[in-house]
Image 1 (cartoon, rainbow, N blue to C red):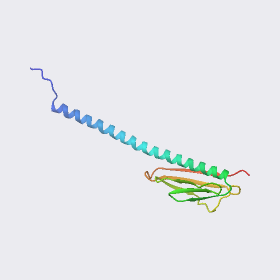
Image 2 (cartoon, helix red, strand yellow):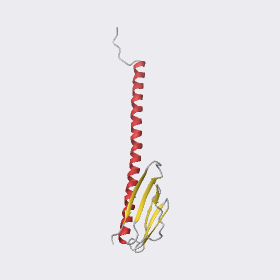
Image 3 (tube, rainbow, N blue to C red):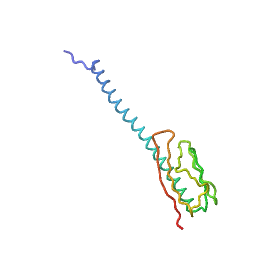
Image 4 (cartoon, rainbow, N blue to C red):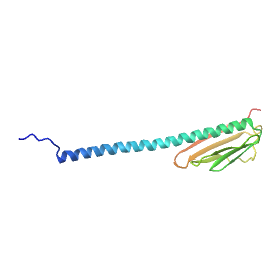
Length: 139
């Protein structure tokens, strides 16, 4: 019998099937990891934006004598009487502020501000963050 070297068709097909199975598993794992990473990045960006907004509210509430808040789903505008307005706007974020501020002008010396800030991602509808805060000035 002659010593022949080579690969049979059955061995080649078996190798391709095994390679295809492993490739599919690895591809699914990488795809799921990328999707999870995108969601976590969106959550982190919303949390950072919410923290920045809350810090701006705190700063204005501590330093201004009177200020107003205007907002809709596209932006939040804090208007202190003694300085320029602070605008928060991002095309990827829906802004919600609860409860609706019934007072047109807020006087920190007499008014305690309780807010719930809800930010929702426009690109990932399941991603949102909520912050509740109370602002009060010592008299």
